[in-house]
Structure formats: structure tokens, C-alpha cells
Image 1 (cartoon, rainbow, N blue to C red):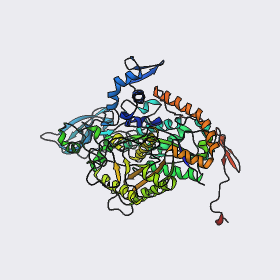
Image 2 (cartoon, rainbow, N blue to C red):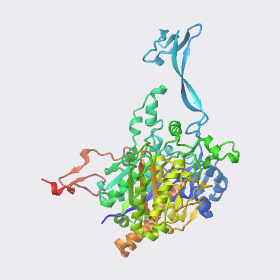
Image 3 (spheres, one colour):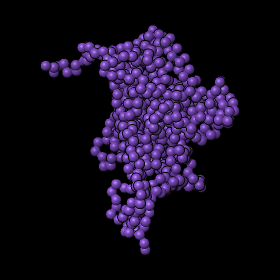
Image 4 (cartoon, rainbow, N blue to C red):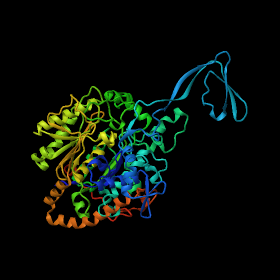
Amino acid sequence: MSRLPVITGFGGINAAGRSSFHNAFKRIIIDQLSSKDQTDTYLGLSTLMQLVNYEAGQYKDTQGKVNTPEQIKSEFGKHILENTLLRKINPDYFDVDAMLFNKQATIKSSDSPVKFKIRNRHLPQVIPASWQVSTLNDQESLVTIADETEILIPDGKPSLVCTAAQIPTGMNPGSLYSSRNHPRGLQMTVFAASDAIRSIGIDWDVIRNTVAPDKIAVYASSSMGQLDDNGTGGLIKAPGIGKRATSKQLPLGFAEMPADFVNAYIIGSAGATGGMVGACATFLYNLDHAVRDIQSGKRRVAIVGTSEAPITAEIMEGYRTMGALATDAELLELDKDKNLNEPDYSRACRPFGYNCGFTMGESAQFIVLFDDELALELGAPIHGAVPGVYVNADGFKKSISSPGVGNYLTMAKAASLAEQLVGSESLRHKSYIHAHGTGTPQNRTTESHVFNEVAKAFSIDNWLVSSIKCYVGHSLGSAAGDQLTTALGTWEYGYVPGIFTLDEIAEDVNNSNLRLEQNHTEVGKEGMDVALLNSKGFGGNNATAVTLAPHITRRMLEKRHGVSAMKAYQNLNEKVSENCLAYEKEVTQGSIAPIYRFGDDVLTGEDLSISRDTIKIPGCDKVVDLNVENPFEDYSL
């Protein structure tokens, strides 16, 4: 019998804030929260954004003034709302009014040759043919140009795209630990993975001493790698701008580096590892790997995640050039009846409405999966379960970026599994979709057609569809991670987020069997049994995941393990829940230093105890069993 992958922890950071304990979700639905929950949300964001610090039992702002949580909401609420979710790109990323570009030019001498002095160490290795160089002294030379020569002139130009979903202003993940010039995506990885692991409420040493080292897996990556100046981006452009590459840029730029960082610096794992890459479906590709491993019993614990930090001038310009991003001019054209002087950046992404392109976002999201037996044994939180993920390609394609048929397969198979698990009535009336919903004209027609046709096939008349990119942007490989942590929030607070920018459903959207809401839909904590998470990636990378609500997950566990086992679990979970609340309180008060164990307990082969049947790793109570199962017994000689 397959084991059920149970979500026992989750954490991360995106434009809405910290994911653990549904903080980012609360920012998205903040108008629907109780007064206390609103105050708590503002408080958590105020410390995350370094607007206040918690000292000696008091919250103090940067001027040293003491503020109560209610005063923080009143004083900083407007600033917090304006500096989260989608907004104009902060100059800390790049100057949208003057993006740096080198202008190529040819200069010619006029009546007299061009002459200039240059330091000897600045002379090029290959002297241009039109240059005459005379050494003046040990430090300088005189260059004479009698003909024409090619030069690059430092220049700048305004960005045509000025919107992005940046993590909350003031939150600097690299300042929370000794980041040693790590690319931003890896800084976010350290924060997000630490947040997810600590959210479990069980010390990691307890977990790793309960299961064998090779029963733990980490599947994490980024779809594009680390492309800022500290990663591959800096490596590639260094020669062109006259800088030297560093020894760290190439290795830290690999797309699977988020998994490597989790293993090496956060949990010290010698278990399975890997980073799947599937464009915008990357999170679900990693999740698929983990789910299949846990179902089969091959692994008992899996950490799944992605981290994406694509808000750089070069990446933004690349996506704009291919026509994918919503430009300022196009947004103004959409809102021409409002006579705006500049776009309403907060409304740049408009899934399933009249739109013009997607809005880039940055995000790092991680979840922790246990098999069902381990979750009950340790009393771990049960946030839900992931019984299946389906991945299909598009077949032959005319354009590598155009959608094809693969997503029909993934959605239909996901709906089928959900129907078998919870029944047709539940699928029809108590399930909903987290759409990829990029906010492009092509996506609104093609993805809605997928949903609508699958709804017809399964006799669903009014399938509720949510799309959260209008809040947190399109974080590329992390997009489904944003969707998953948001789905968990629905089961805690009872709301499915509306598409707040959906003033009008576009004519070419296929929605005869769909329900697209602008406002948040109140469904109750147990109003939805299933959420289907959908991803459509460049190149035909389609994936859909089935996620089960915590109340459904508990019923399934009770059916399999019995009432007495669930009562024993509840007793164990009481202490774990206390630990979870203690962590949440600690982080809300600003103690957000992530786990980062650089150089701790480094092992070599000499530290291992190796026998014919086992390998013992110091620090792990369980051994690695070398008596592996032979899957080819019928073929063995």
C-alpha cells in the first residue's frame, strides 16, 4: 500500500511576506481578517521589514519610540501595504529611469589625431591597429589615434517595464546570516528552507535520528539559476564591462544550488538530492519527485522547494523583448479611460481579464513532506497532503513557447485522482483550481480552455478558479510554491483569494463551466476538500498537483491507522503545536536569523564505520542499510 505524503511544514518569502503560519496569505486577504488578525499581520510585516525592533519586551521604531501592536498598525499600515505585493521596482534592484547599457560607437579623428593618456595597467592586451602607443613612464602611456576606432560608452535608458513583485521593502535576506556574497536566490533559499524546517515544531536532530540518513531527500532548484551579479549573470557579463570573474560566480550559479545549500548548510544531509528544472513548472517537478519517492517508501522525509530572484535589468529586458511582460505603455493603454499619468503598478497583472503581459516576481518557497506513519509517530503538524502530481509535455510544437496539449492531460488526470479519493460530489462542489494565470492574452484563452473542457468532462458546472499572480507576480519556477502555500491558507482562514484586478472577464476566456471571482470567496475552513495546482511552462512543461485539505487528510489517516492511533497522535501533537507557536512568536518579534551551519560537523570517509551490511554516519542514530532490494531478481545470474 502506498504511503501518503503529508505536508508537515512550509515556509518562504514572496511579495506578500513570510509564508510560514500563513503570514503571506493573511497579507493577501487582509481586508477579510478580524481586527486581531490584521494587527498581527501588520506586526509580523513591520519586524520583517525592519520598521520596528523588539527590545526588552517592547517594539521600538528606528527613532527609539515604543509602539504597541495597535499603534504599529496605525502608524505603519499604509507604508506596509504600499511596500508589499506588486509595485514599482525599488532602486535597490536597478534604476528603472536609467538602466545601464553600453553604447557602441565609432569615433574618427578630425583635423588632428586623437590623443589621450592611459595607465599602463589599463591598456588592452591586444592593441587596436589604429592605436599608436608611446610609453611615458612606468605608470602611463600616450595613445594616438589617427584613424577611426570602436569604443563602448557607458549609457542609460529608461526601462519600459517598471513593475515587479518584490519581497517586502526593507527585508534583506543576506543580512540575516553570513551570506558571503551569495546570489540573492541562495540568500532567499537559506531563509525559506530554515523557515519551513522550523515551522514543523520538531527539532531537526529528532527527525534525522528517527529515520535512516538515506531516507531523507531534498529536491530544490531554480528554473533559471542564479543570474544576478554574484552568480552566472555576473560571470557572463564581467568580460564585457571590464571586470574579472570571481571564483564563486560559476559554482553558485547552478540551478540545483538551492538543494545543495539546504544539504550542506542547513540540515547536513547525506540523503538523496536533486534539482528538477521545468521552466515555470519547476516547483511541481520537484514535488512530483518527492511525492513518488514517499509513496513508494523509498524516502520518508522530503524537503521540496524553489528559489527565484529574477528582478535584474537584464532578465527583465529579456522577457520584455520577447513580448512577455506588461509594459508601462501597454498598461496605460488598458486604463486610458482613467487618464493616468503613470500606470497603477499594483494592478499590473490581470489574469483572465483584458491584459497585456505578466509581472515578474521573486519568491522562495519550501515545504516538508513526511510519510503518514512518520507524521503520526512524531506528532507533526498536518497541513494537508499531496497524493499525486502529473507532468506531461505538449507533443510537436510550432513555437517552443506556445501552449499545446500536455496541460489537458495533467489537469484531467489530477481531477480523476481527486474524484477517486474524495468522490465525485466533492470534486464537483468542494474543489477549486489555483490557476497558473500569468496575465497574458495567450494564457487567458488557452488555460481557461483546459479548465473548461476538463470541467465539462467531469460534470463540474461552476468550478471556482483562483489566480494569485495579481498579488505576488510570476515568480517563474517558484510559481506553484506560491500557489501551494496560499492553498494551505485557505484551509486555515476559509477564503479562496479573488482575482482583484478582474474588473471584466475577457471575451476570449472560456468560462461556461468556470467561476472567476474578483472578490475573495468565503468557503469556510472545511468548505474545500481539494485544490488543484496548475503550472504551464515554456517549452511545454505542464504539471498539475492534487492537494488535499487537512480535514480530509486526517480522515484518510484515521481510516488507515485507526481511531486509537489518531488519539495517540493528538497527544504527541500538543507539545509540537506549542513549539510551533513559540517559533511563530519568536519570528514575529524579529528573531529571524535562519539556520546556517557553515563548516559545522564536516565529515570525511575516515569518519564512517563501514561493514558489509551497514554504513554508520556520525551524528545519525540510524544506519544506512546496504542490503538493497534487487528489482531485477528474475534477471540475476
